[in-house]
Image (cartoon, rainbow, N blue to C red; front, side):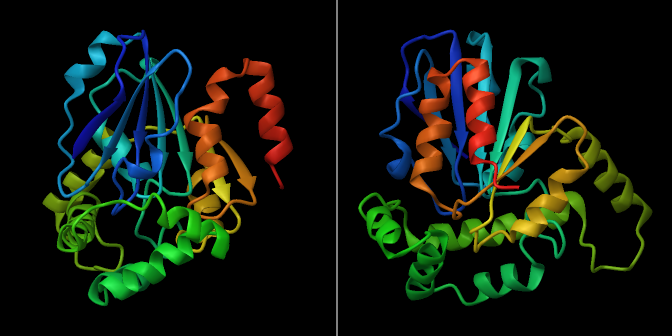
Length: 257
């Protein structure tokens, strides 16, 4: 996993953003959260994460998007939960699942059929309309195609290796014990989960299913697409200028439930 500082001024707080699959810092480096250092994480070919950099911060505010919603709790498993505020946007902690993630067939078909042309179709589906897609193309990530295809393959392999395949009905006690231990170890609950009803990558109803049973999580339904610049501007910049009451009021205004 790559960890890239966008702002490093020795602030007492850090905004830690876990981006999605195939991302880099390019679409997100223009934001400037008030009174915080700002780091972007991406490239989930490995989930290795240097947690020592977090020791200098009094508070770590975590925003995770898409596949980053799954990666963040794994990367931060050893960090005390009381130090973290976790916010999810358009992703789930079980990213491959017919009822609570991306349906497995869809995920596998995306991987097996991935070409430069199909990647562009995927990026188009991330955006709400042609204008949003055109704007995204101005800041699209600059990563090598073979690298991001390998990333998608390794996400699939690692997810099933760590948490099991629901379609595999064979029972292996040792593997089941490993899966249960991993679920317990990486069981971070998000404080807020923003769910875009116009998301065409993660089915909105699956995201609702994923977060509805979490005791301390506040799901918020919005009209956002999977990639939505206005929501990133809010999550990665504007919300950190708000008071707690202003934030709660804003959440109510964008909640379309």
